[in-house]
Length: 124
Image (cartoon, rainbow, N blue to C red; front, side, top):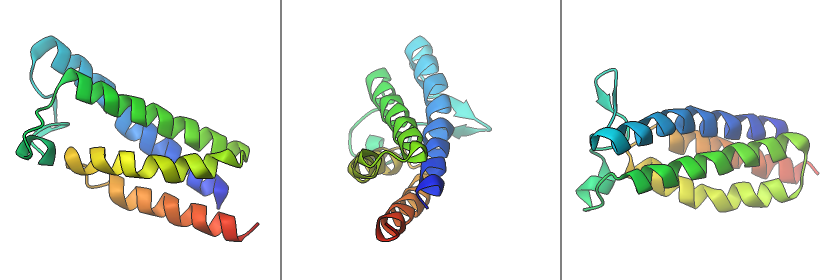
């Protein structure tokens, strides 16, 4: 289960991180939210509705969280005990970004990773 949780973490980090880099780069150059297949990637979500406009700094912060997610995933795959704690600790931060940018895949995959982590703790 720990291995599966690690793979979910890596998938989340890479899956959101690479487009996040492209989105941050595009925003820094143009001041506009990058669109992919006609959809705004990291804009026009709850953050903006709460008065938190998309910015390069916000996008870079999200990419940093994605890098941390990949690191947690690698640590989980390697079997490092601290990785579980880091995975649980990172979840609320990720959740803020997933909800704030209206990324619907993030919360269910984050929940899956959390369930896998809890099961892996009980399997010890």
